Amino acid sequence: MTAARYVAIITDGNGRWAQQRGLPVAEGHRAGADVVKERLRDAAELGIEELTVYSFSTENWSRSDEEVAGLMRMFGERIASETPELKQEGVRMRFIGRREGVDTGLVERMEWAEAETAGNDRITLFVAFNYGGRAEIVDAARSFQGNSEEEFRRHLYAPEMHDPDLLIRTSGEQRVSNYLLWQCAYSELVFRDELWPDFDRGALEACLRKYETRQRRFGRRG
Image 1: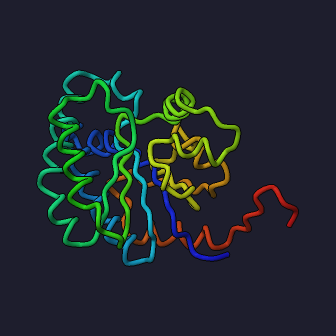
Image 2: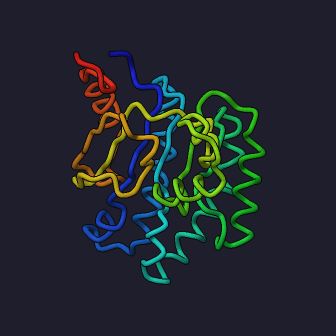
């Protein structure tokens, strides 16, 4: 099997990581955001062309007002402070998910980051924010009038996104949690026990090696 070029990650475990250390949940999210940036750089060095991370789901609005407000604030701050750096490093940024109902200022920052990095091609970082796989399919179906899967794909949030070769989930949970349901139909799945802030380069490399041992058939006989 060839190396994985398109990788998606469910970055699970920030809250538990903070709880284990007697820290506020916000500190777990900050540590998790730092790891996203570190693993993005590793991914680029390892030849990955697209990395998709689950940042905030449509179901996460049910969390406490304090946690949600903190996440929104951190998200905006990170976009503002890190976009120039990511631009210099050749990262193209794309945000996928529903933008309706999201603070206008935050949406403007997302659009600014996308515009600033649109010309980059070293690696694309897709950030799934206010995202749900079922929501994406419903939203696509509203405007779809064709009769083929390829035509339907053009109505997804990021039609240019490749189907992930590999889907990784941290924290020991073994489910896809409404993530990239259309795109991950044939993705290889790897589950890791580390909480996301503890997911280091060695863990990423181990996932990539495990992928390389798999035989992908896409419905064909081996």
